[in-house]
Image (cartoon, rainbow, N blue to C red; front, side, top):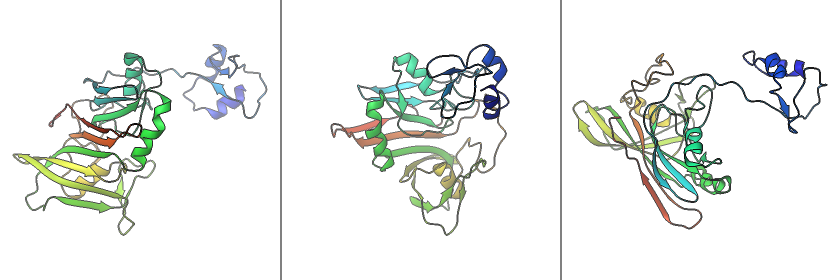
Length: 270
């Protein structure tokens, strides 16, 4: 088992040390030993040591809470779920403890650097029905973004194209002449000098869709570290938030048919 664990796990995992400390265990709770024979189809469990994480500034506003749902308004730079270098500094880990909800889980995606509304199920038994709403595009999402004003841009406009986010690439890209898989309605709500607040209504949910669409219109979102160019920004640099806000969510509740409508408590600029 020791040889298999060293083969299976990345070099940063100190297999020998964890084995000596009896921190690898089987389903039964029995510690895994270096000399145990390798057995196929066996589950082995361990908790890796977590790096020190910088505290993400900003408050998680609980907008709504009931038996089935928790709706929060998260700040920029806070991951929705524990992932990679962001474990303790995530909505799920913080709120499971604070709210006493060990099964709390998000129902849709919201990028770490995007602020605004995130829906979470209080228990696993509620999750499937709400996730189906998102999969079926039955949830109306409205975002707002701060971006430059182009006086030659005729708005409102619906941007439709094919977006692909390739593994290992920081930026998503538009594939010309491919079938449409991304669509966003872009409207200008207000102006403040050379900047405008745009109302964005996505009809699909591709990775980086809103950021790619505004960049394609020549009005990249203020504070975007990827578009138009990739910037080398430290993971604990919270000085320049992306000016993109998940502002509104509306849907019919799958359990009782009631109209659910939630609004962010934040405003641009963030």
